[in-house]
Length: 418
Ligand code: ASP
Image 1 (cartoon, rainbow, N blue to C red):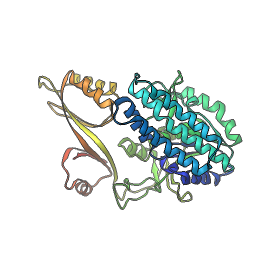
Image 2: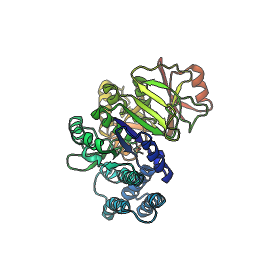
Image 3: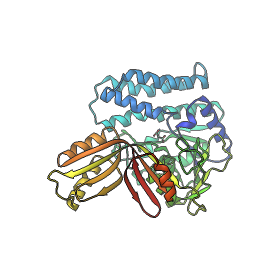
Image 4: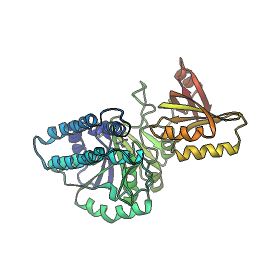
């Protein structure tokens, strides 16, 4: 059986949904489980909605109307004036209505997951309805009953034993009857609350299903021809890799390459399932294969850009040395605030860390740090990582920029720049 993952860009409009149907149709005869993300930039819009509701950053009802209009426009283009899916979508959106009627009391991350998950719940309803309309036999399943997580909201930790048992119990018989359509990015807790698996988490969802079902392969269908050495949004003259090893793919995602979610590779590597990254506009082109052994030569360095970075400089209140005791305390505070360190350095009197600016978590971290340390920070920075770098490539990339922090080893150079 095959697992297909379609990201937001592939279902950003009615034509995208139609194209998805055509891609799936061209694999008639195969057993296929389809994992779908929220449509277009819906997750970003739902994040805005969450912020509007919790922090009053803008009018929550206006943002919600925008999101609904966008989906109804796609629905009308696909199905005309009436179709049973309209009620299903209305019933899904109403969950947000109920939520925003009350004042926000719960924890931000909890609220975030209950709201943001609606993006995938509606996109999969639309895709499934389209499949049935286009003559593809399919079944919509609610992933929250299959991917079981703990209650770490916004970064649910998967309970693999429970998840494997649920998936293996039902999904093979569903696949015998037709295509299975489900949501990426979501999980469910034992109390039936919704969790998310971290931004871009739909790849991970696909890999969980593939590992539990021992799939032949996972294909993630993208708006790029495969895995490139750099993001074409920032760089011209990118090159595509035909093959990459699991190891290299893990390294790339660790440093922030957004082409695949970082947790995706491990389950596939353990089960030796290849990951194909292919273009949904050129489905017959070979794309990139990520597998155990791969043949490649890095003619150009892999460049990974992470924007919206903050560089923290932390020192002790009495300007004493930073000791192992301090470091241990500091790592505890970062972990408790769920803030990941992208790069770090220690000196006699300070500990420097480069982190993502993530709403909520950053404030929590700052509050806890300030209880025991002096903290200064620079924001609006960019972290540039070069794998298989050359000295020339580092010079070229940092020309005209101020480098605030730099680290190199044999394979990788990292620079925090302004
Ligand atoms: N919709 C989610 C996001 O935009 C998950 C995904 O697309 O993988 O992060």
